[in-house]
Length: 227
Image (cartoon, rainbow, N blue to C red):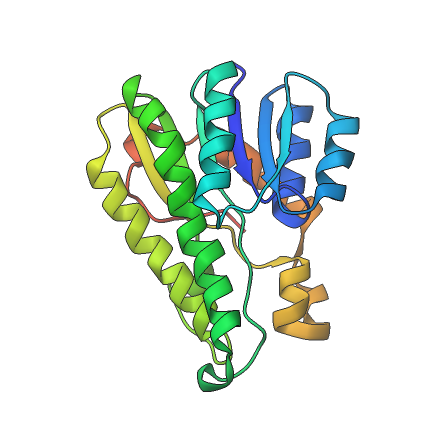
């Protein structure tokens, strides 16, 4: 059975890998990213019924317009994946600027809430669909110099588990730790050691089948992509 999948942050890393794999398996992807260049490349590579839009999830107005347009032309998504995220510039918390801290909170927490606010009511109306909010190992543990990022991902854990208690039967909200994958973000955090971790190519082979098998009975359960 093919699924309609909404994914944020599809320009690179895990978002791009998931997009390509879902489409390869025959599913329809509706994605967004801040990079117009990346969105244009996806539009050229994948035509209708796939749909890609340039927007900033931290903007409630932009997300609202995006959701309204998609929901007017597609059914509510079977799978809604909040993947878009940024990490703070590595530094002790007191050295993280107000602007840097705010960007992490605005994208990682408010962006997730914005997408939920404008897509989930349509899913609730038909009492169907799975919401996956990407958390992190740093949403369940901590490390120095990533306090802002940790705070945002701990928030995603709580936000998602509370959302799970609000959804009707037939739906699920799941906080998902993708694991430690060699992405651009990991390069920032781990430097040269990043190459020692799971490649995106290897990760997506396990992650996409895992995501497709999520079901309503998984509601509220913190999960991790198998290593």
